[in-house]
Image 1 (cartoon, rainbow over the protein chains, first blue to last red):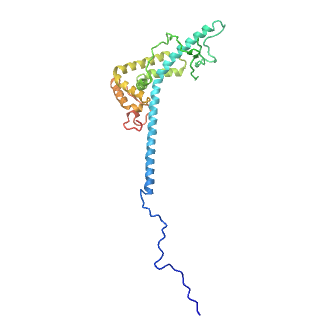
Image 2: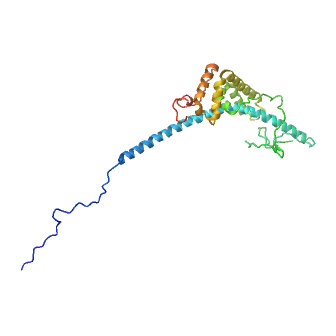
Image 3: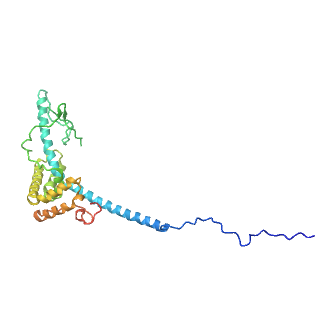
Length: 125
Length: 148
């Protein structure tokens, strides 16, 4: 008595159907390459414009600074006249207040130097 | 430089009423900031010698009493230029400084009135706006700008 011949297990006749492991969604919109290069282009153009703006701002700043430089002498002259007037008046008041103190020099600098220093106090009446 | 502090009295701010001594008395320009900013480059061009003389004098000695004479010359020159501007280009000048007043005193916002003013001043007073050390076309002459 002979054993039946071994039989290999085989797919069903006609084969198995395809396994649906993919999502069947239609592709929409631009491809990744287009998106990436588009964003790079936009950033580049924007940065170029920022750079141009920085250069232009530097020139605007230069214009502003020079307009101030041109005005400084006039404003300083005006301020100097006012300071001179007020300092003389303060000195006169100080002399009047301290006239009874012997050896007092009105308007004397507190520093041992001839260099001009702005007064740190004002004598008011 | 010492900080500036106002002299305050219990009754209020102290304003020195003493009149200016004869050696320093001089009428002041009396213009506000916008007209001055508008005329700044013309003042710089017109009063160059007096301004430089004054600044050299200040460099010599910072005492306000030291440069009173030069300072008077500077002020007289500025006043002279302002009278000339008023005589020759008052309309254009006023248009420019009112524009500056309205636009935070930025030059770039007021190029149109500035151009008419510059043309007028150049044709009548022969003064030109020059920005020293500017790179490329001077900013006030550029047609296409990013800030405007």
